[in-house]
Amino acid sequence: MIIGLTGPAQAGKSTVAEYLVRNYGFKELSFSEDVLDPILKERGIPITKMNRSKLGDELRRKEGMDVLARRLLTKMDYPRIVVSNFRSPEEVEFLKNRTARFYLIRIDADPKIRFSRRGKLDPQTEKEFFARDERDAKNKGMEKVFKMADYTIDNNGPLEKLYEQVDELMDEILGEERELRLAGGEG
Image (cartoon, rainbow, N blue to C red):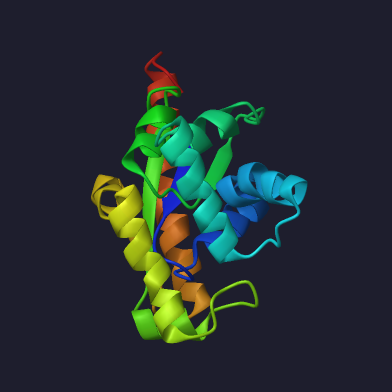
């Protein structure tokens, strides 16, 4: 099973991924840390979210919009995988077509809340911070990815509310899996 997470910067994707690892036995893989960061290190380029974004754009231009998913697939060696930061529809389609159980979850939050959550790797001005969202929508089709989501989580409240929503989704998803196994189908 693969759970894909998508959403704008600082919406809470990493928090949800960590929760799934901690509470549901998932292994986390990341387009950034598992695909882009090793290339940036090899090239001697500092690891920042802006440099990751630019490298991702470069690779997609040269090798196709699903390149990050293709490269990440080689690292998927566990029955439950959570992948953060889907940016292009092609990434979603590539992995969706290679597993019996793929779920895309959109994590969303108010822009002001997202900006207040920025970390040291994020752009520090509002203009630069939100420019990345605009670039992702324009260059990668992120708005289409958002529309492809099977589920949406609103992360404008406290962590407890976020975790409750994740637990409800996992009850539904894992319940479907159990029903399929009992019926003799895929699972």
